[in-house]
Image 1 (cartoon, rainbow, N blue to C red):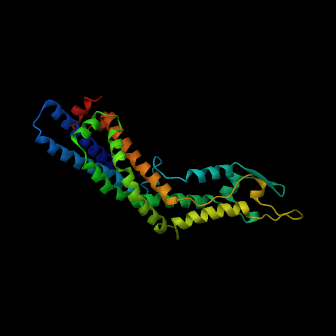
Image 2 (cartoon, rainbow, N blue to C red):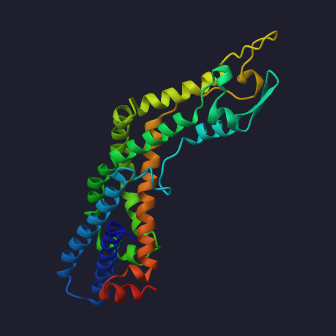
Length: 283
């Protein structure tokens, strides 16, 4: 476990400890004057914890190099590419698979590979998500300040992802509304090489369609194209910012959910005596 992950675990552990103490004090009839102070401590701990999670994703490669949250191509586009890779065509007596065409192209017919363009597009989408991740902090803070004693009790004694569900239920719509414009700006401004993510996306779609439509000149035969030789179809550009926003937020909540479950279930993350004592009761 890295130092950053350890700090994140401590923040979440502290949060759940405060939740437990709050609940116990109420059940035992402890002076309710102490409740608001504990609640404020809980809110601060949870704020720091979510800030830590968003900071990790906002760093360079926070999305791109984390396979659990890495954003790939939109499902429809991925399905089209999978169908393309599965084809096999015969051109002038030579057999080509879609996998080969996609990966290496057909230099003989001036058809270029698409793999490098796809790699650039995926990098760009993830860079856009990383650039917007810090926008989650203030929205999480707003939800955290609304936590009640009842919320705290339900979170502590709820499912392993109770805190994550609470945050998602209370922040997803606001996060999407805030994230998407930032993602949209990033798609226009973040560069992959000399091109914006938006340009890389357009180039990818156009290159794919060009491969399908490219006329292949075969001596003594009618000109043909991969589109004519298969049942594939060209594709249109989709709303990339909406897709990247949804996937970016899914990744953010996945990180929070896994952290929460690990803290609840893994005694090795209980790094102080009080944490061992309190969370030992939940084992």
